[in-house]
Length: 377
Image (tube, rainbow, N blue to C red; front, side):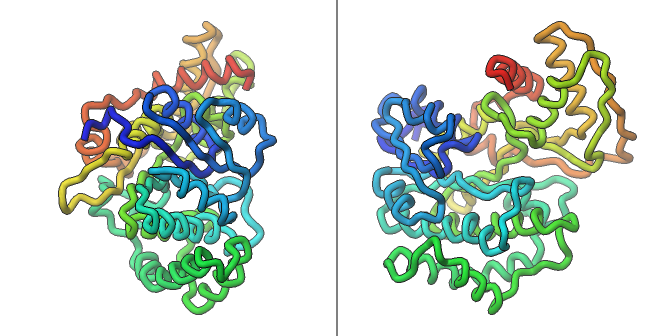
């Protein structure tokens, strides 16, 4: 099947106002001429982004959270393919209970996957490269040969059936989806989640990684395509994380101001929004040979960058745009030996993004800066 031809007339998307989803909607409208309808969920119709999306022709926004069963049912029933993009992200506001993380990231995915199978709809799911934290996270990292922690994989196999049983009860109307936290707590008491050792010593990283791996298994069990996104950036990224944070710092800094590294341990692997959207678009027509799993590390380069290099790259990009003076940026000590890890992107470029040129970081960064300046961010 030609990856340039989008084979569906109707699309369902969860998390419409998120960074990836909102830009993907724009791509679909511009690139898929046969598309008749996009049905997308968002928590509130009152946000500025929701109001902008709601004015677009062919876009119908459905108000409601990811734990609202009628919303999920409509997303699936109105569409031929479903992109499940909504999730709780680490480095955002921590929910009051751990059960909320697993409800949002895992139970919702199990419900969406079950609904897609019932109605014969294709499923594409966005995960995160953070799942690789649950392993050695060193050397050359490839999707199908990576060695995840045995306590994680054993727990996922042990608890998966309980999540499916709960999802089936919810779909049958025997249990409200938005009141399932007590059920999740009971399931986890009977089969405790592995919490030792704690990834990076922080609950949010650990739970995000574990919940995303569990959610991936639900998507894969139902013939879904999984994209493990690395650090998202590009026009449309207005966040204060990773590349977005660096852009905001440089834009606010005075000429010749000295900027210090805040997270010397941080290693960022950029994933340009345009490249992500192209992968999502092509996932609709993806056909894989037998034995090739539909899991892809979605990154725009194989190597990571550290915070000082990131800040300098942003500063140079701003100099090219504005002709402004440079800022003084702290330089980290060089790492001894070879890079700690690299991503093997051969599978991505062989099957999903064949004959597509990934966006160089300098180009994507300049595009993001121009958008931020244009929109006043």
